[in-house]
Length: 294
Image (cartoon, rainbow, N blue to C red):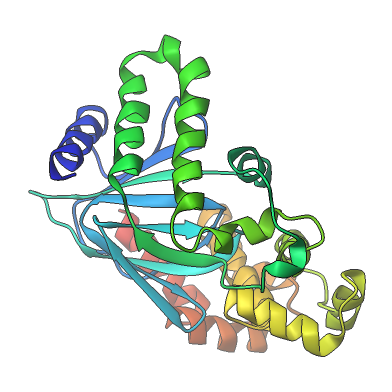
C-alpha cells in the first residue's frame, strides 16, 4: 500500500500546487493541501469521507477528539459543527487530503439487504478507521480520471460507489448505514439536524422537535447526544456562532447585527458565548482573522 500512497501523492501534486481546498472536475471530490500547521478552524462538515494521503489532523466534535493520519480515514455521516487542526505538515511534505462527499441515496445504492431499523442502536456520526488497499486502489483510479476528463461522467460514479462500498463493508460500516435506513432513530435525528442547520436563527423548541420524530424528550436527548456528542442547544449554539463569524468576516457585518441575524437577542450574551468559543471577543477575533489573510 506504500507504493499506492506514493502514487496518490504524485497525482495530487501534479494537479494541486498551492495550499487551500480545491474542488475538482469530479463531482463531490475535493483535495485539501496545507504546507503549514493550523490553528483550530471551525466549520460545518458535510457527509463525507476524508482520506489523508500525507500528514495528520485532529478533529474535535463537541468534547470528543478524533486524530487520524495517512493510514486512516475519517467519515462524517451528517452535517456537523466541528473544529479541525492540521498537526503534521511542512513545505517539503505538505498535508494532503482527499475528501469525497456522499448522500443517503449513495449509501443505499452501495449496499443491499438492509437490516431492520431497530437493529441499529444510534452511534456517533463520526468515526476513524483504517484505510485498506482496496480503498487506495480505487482512489488512484478515481484521481487518474483528472487526466482524462472525457471518462469522468461514466467512470467516476463507479469508482466513488466502490470506495463507499468498501467503507460500508469495513469494520463499523453499520455506524454509517444507520443514517440511511428509513424509520431508524439515527435517520430521525439526521432530519432534526437538518432542521437546526437550516433554521438556526429561530428559537429551538426541543419538545416540538422530539414530538416531530415521535420520541419522548428523554429519548430524544439521549439519541441526539449519542450521534452528535452534544445537546441540541449546544449544537445550535455552535452553528449560530460559526455563521455569525462568517457574516462578520465575509460580509463585513458589525457584531450586533451578526448576532441578531443568527438569532441572538442579547449582544452581551452573544459576545460572552463567542469569546468562550473562539477565544477572543468578536471584533478582536475578526481583526485577527483579517490580518492572517493579508
